[in-house]
Length: 220
Image (cartoon, rainbow, N blue to C red; front, side, top):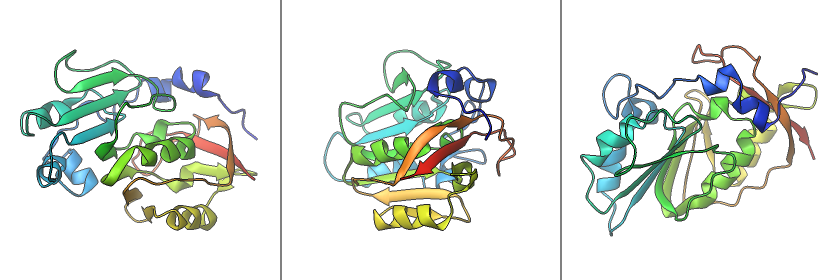
């Protein structure tokens, strides 16, 4: 098997540290969150009842989409972006932008919307992150992310395939194989029978055409 990287080595990889997938992505338009997610995040938040709604964007890049959203959402909405690399367009104020690994960062509240646009392609323990993230949703909160399950490898390096999809769906998490999009509504407890072994940053381009990371697991 290919020599696998731990989180520290993976974060130093040029494939991960120099990733620019969301540096220029806008909130709306051709190269936008609305197009990738299939809905306008601000319009979705605006339709929610109550005060203090929250949107968490993981692997947010420069934070451009959140900055644009801050101009449109109501004043009491909390917008939080997290990215490994501190390449944010602004510091302080609104939104809150945090430079931290998504594998270890933990919020201090639950969110009505959690997104990760093309960010999981560069994460090592994709399933571990997924399990943590879906527990951060409010009861009616929505999670949407891009995830190519071909990048989740088990045993001798084969793609996890139907067993993983079945496990996700049993936990109430939907996977759209055509769009390579994962989603759920409401907080979930996700317990999958896989032990994380490490990451391979030499996997080559995925369906986006950009170099990505394979995550290796041992079924348990």
